[in-house]
Image 1: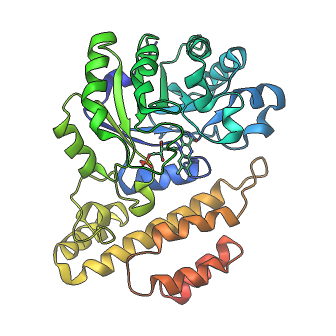
Image 2 (image 1 turned 90 degrees about the horizontal axis):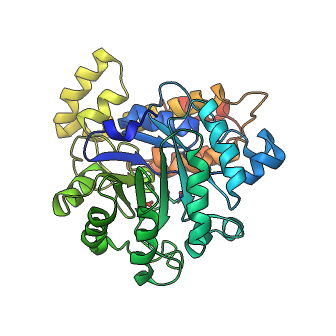
Length: 353
Ligand SMILES: Cc1cc2nc3c(=O)[nH]c(=O)nc-3n(C[C@H](O)[C@H](O)[C@H](O)COP(=O)(O)O)c2cc1C
């Protein structure tokens, strides 16, 4: 079995799986802005796929060769179905399988997601079933279902299942995302891993906004192997870039940002320009707008007869790109009234963008 987890930099950074966000289109935008070391797909239900086939999962399992490595995230409560979907993911060329055991949504906990925290035997069976595909199997979960002190028993159980990586969203299911993530538990979790499964990598998740914050956490708790960032990408699409942000949270212009969004020649000019703060805002704006153009192009490219894409969900991304520069609110308002990508481009042209 080829295990990509063994060849990663330390710490490694992962773009968190986010349903209706981290599809093949947005993953490529993030890759261009500043690539994480690993991608995960949105979660895909095994039972849905086994019973209803491709139409149950839409475009969730589309991947391209340049997304490397990428793990397919699957979920469910029927090990037989997990086995079949894992085998399918292998055929599709995925490099790993991640099992979601943390989703708190009502629809998920009927059979899987965080419900598996309360069904440890089923969780073990799901891992064993996924492993039959011959790909490295990892798990993403929460600290517990209701009480924080469930973490020790639950994580010990998972660590005994010989998984390659355990990602812990440092909250319970009950806490949803309403309280700050429990970073203070990291040292105890790492000690537990060292005791039970020293070869299992530990990735931490929850309230880590960008690479700088991730690196600071690793400096504080040196045994962390990986950092997973989710919502930070909404505040800064360049959050995986390895250049320190300049200025406030919404003004993270950097040489890396400029080079990510410009051609080679322009990049040099922008790089110099960015370093002079006088044009910082302009470079910031153009780098974000260039990403929006890329998003539109990729959206059109992946809007195919087999997988038609709805336009309205695209609007939720505008806030990511049309942000932190003068006139952004007004431009966003105009964009929210568009009906397709052609109209979006026309508005941007009207604004000379
Ligand atoms: C819109 C959205 C969709 C999500 N979908 C998934 C998913 O498909 N699978 C999963 O394991 N977690 C999912 N999550 C949870 C995130 O992966 C992550 O654990 C959570 O947002 C906490 O990390 P953060 O503080 O860095 O955002 C989702 C979160 C959001 C906000």
